[in-house]
Image (cartoon, one colour):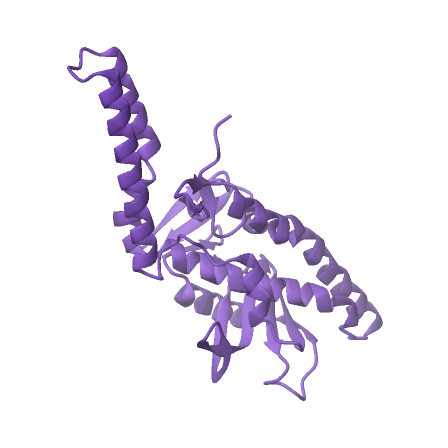
Amino acid sequence: MSTPRKHHYVPQVHIKKFEHQNGYSLFIKEENKIISKKLSDDIFAVKDLNSSLDEDGNIDHTSVEQTLSERWESKFNTHLNILISWITESIKHKEYSDNPIKDSLKFFFEYGLMGHFRVIRQNRKFNESIIEPLLDFEELFQDIDDLDNSNSELSKEELELGKLELKNFITLTTKFAQNLNDNLKYPVPLPTEIPMFVPEGLICDFIITISPPYYLPDCTSIILRSEETFEYQNRKMNKIISIGIPIKDNLYIQIKNKDFFPNETTEIHIIEEERTREINQHLMKNALNQILVSQDFTP
């Protein structure tokens, strides 16, 4: 069984929350056109995005992908259902204690951060021109193996030596490229690092739309940063004020750092069409290049 190498920078479990009756409508900003998709499989996906290199320079296509799945993707629906149940009960009883949802707010804060990092990584043109061709060296080795049964003038020993030297060269070149620029997707940001960016106190605005539906951008979330900084791995990092995520087609959550909103509390808002369109315009503006839109969207 082959190893899946199509990696999503927005998980399919999230993408499926924006499916309409005919599938999906994916707007490409650079080309100003809409592409209709029946399935979520090839939406917001890049070959080898979550692949990594081990100490020997071998490419691992599964470890990071599995970690991301276990930490966020497999828990997405659980935390979403917790939020929806809380919203329903809060509206019913007109009480808004956010204690039951603190863990879910933290989960989606981390999720929004990870989605932002992943889309930034996948967009680097340097990856496409330097790293990705090197990933095909397994296929290149197979081409060399085919020479063993040909009429090549090289001996089998010479072919084996050539393959070994070629692999060593590609391994060293890949490692060099990996260390050359911090913007490479090898290595990807480690999931264990994400909690370092999460503030202790979180509150949330739950913004519910009746119509039209929200859009889902390739960047997953909209992050608002402060000029205030904190130290992380000998670097100054900007504190995060808020993270906004359309987590389903009728629910947008704005998770806020309570340090910047000391007098505010978690609230629920049901908004009109005009306000929904303003949020969608903001999502469109922040999308890197692709965004899932409503079925009736026109460029």
